[in-house]
Image (cartoon, rainbow, N blue to C red; front, side, top):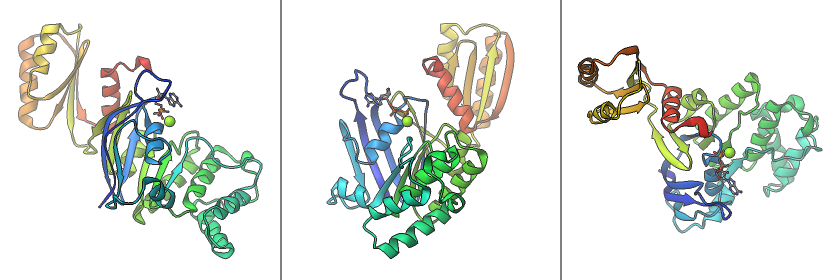
Length: 306
Ligand code: ADP
Ligand code: MG
């Protein structure tokens, strides 16, 4: 069953000449985890704001689940929680006071609210800091409190905007373990991060945004690639010849990267290199990781802008 589906989604801020999102298509099944990656300014937070009903898309559509009759705001109010990039708690209140305040907004009775606060504190391992003022918490505990607040309403769909930024390794591991257990409980998760190894670890689907455009990454880490670095930049003619191969090839200055699916493709690539007689500096044959794909892609798109 689909958790949500976005079709040809676009968004342009009123004061901006370029769109923050363009033609984004995502279909996420319930109980799955989607990783949203991309550099600063790529549109990740904008997309989460749209998925949370905080921004209305300028083009395209967004549907949750099967029930098209449910209005978006009602569905979001009842089933969706966003853990924002910014801290969303009262710094002067203690951890417990914050949770008690936010649970009171969830419409639970006093007793049910207290039980919920205790269970969320346990889930996020916040018991030992429950009486500390939120503003005095370490970065890791602040992130856990941000997450705990979102869990109070027991959302079916949970969005997390860079939940591990500025977080020590112990808190990061606690947050990731918690996300895995939420996923095991059947929650749908959308998770933005710069840390690709994390995304690779917990996500079922990965979308990379660059300047508002989506690239759909394969989590199949078995894909092989070969990168040849020549002694001099490739001529236009050679770039054309590499691009003409029936293989996914990226060319940049003196570097050619080909993504290899079969041994025939590797041989085709090697034959062209052999025939070219171009002087070779280095050949690197390896399996792609998400990090490698990301870096190759960023290089292709001129990462200097970021
Ligand atoms: P990310 O979360 O990936 O860093 P954002 O969604 O915050 O990216 O931003 C996407 C683009 O939209 C950027 O170019 C950013 O400058 C622009 N943007 C974000 N918020 C606003 C806003 N409130 N008004 C105008 N432009 C904005
Ligand atoms: Mg952001």
